[in-house]
Length: 399
Image 1 (cartoon, rainbow, N blue to C red):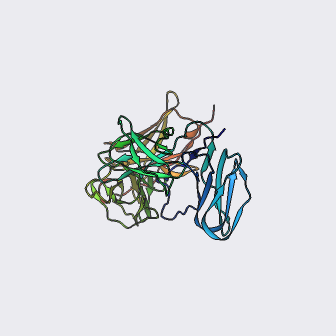
Image 2: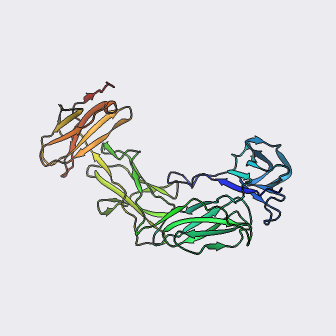
Image 3: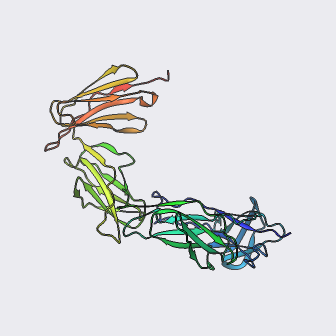
């Protein structure tokens, strides 16, 4: 009794904004299956292991067990393994490097159900569409030469791609929002595979906002002359970035290690450089459509020339505490500073109309244990700042 060979690929997650694509090289080989006849996919199955660089060494793994390594007479970019006997199993491969072996390929599973298993569907570069952005659906299977089909929920027709002879994936342009899935078939009269998991594509009037960070913290107390770098990260690569304070664009030195991020260098900062900073980006092909603004990063600078504020605490009912910061001038910007094992950082801000800021801590727990102090800065030129207040130590036990 012949067995229908089916193919299941388990793929990793696509790169996120945190991947430094400009400097990253992935030596992981690719593994796919080919059959002598797509009318009978179980006949004479061959697995192809394709390396990223030419190498004489290849090795196949079946069910986690390494097979005998293959050493070729001359380097090649790929090697084919002909399967004999019982072909069911979970396969990976690796290729040689000058210092050993690459990591294993992604998983390829050959099993024997009566229907073809689902392919894997992804959207590149992102799962949304907006003017100026070319979003593409990528449907990937494990068998070379099949026909791929893409369906949008609610549509009656498939978008069909001819046989992908040179690859095991097909790409489709995506122009409308919706829920998408893809399938494949081995030949014209063959049954469709199980559909892929559904991927939702949204239509956005403008690209979503980026993320702006200052050394991993959204707020810091800085001294004039400090070197400050703000990092702006977009959800896709190859965009134009802009740094702003309020509605004003700031033309400052910048650098980058990856096409999805940029470093803005505010070196050195001076009194008057405090305030809220945001960043945004736009697609290269759409010079008029900026993304939404990032969440703001607030920089507060203090030269410590103003008198230190008075700082006191008042227990409240329940597990609550009121921290009072009193300055000798009105209309200042107050900052509650927390100091613990993670460093010294601004915990909260306030801009009261008078001379006093009240910071309330509710539902106090062990996590609130730290040293607290406060500072204030004058929002009028020359933007002087105070020395820090005396520290108050808060220790909360588990009981």
